[in-house]
Image (tube, rainbow, N blue to C red; front, side, top):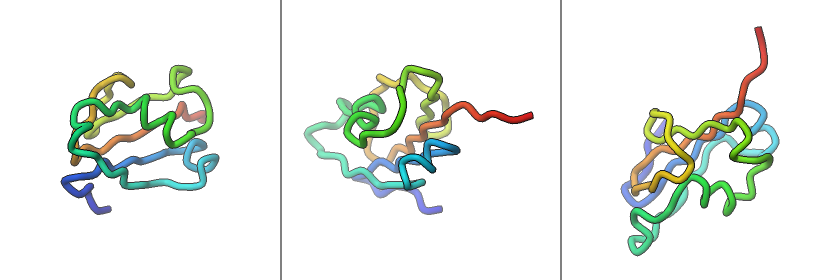
Length: 87
């Protein structure tokens, strides 16, 4: 896997979320004027991802769990992780 470019955010989807959205990874360009104002919640809505972000979807920024309203920076890796069923 290749990391995000300096002016982009790498977005990853996992499990059923990836299957329902129809993609696993995207690069999202960051406008320099939006630096520090873009959040995972805003990207969730812009990407029209299935389901409800506040209902058990976990957010990870740079491989650390984070709040959905944490500001994103260019070069960040953002992952949306739904609950996984299994035993």
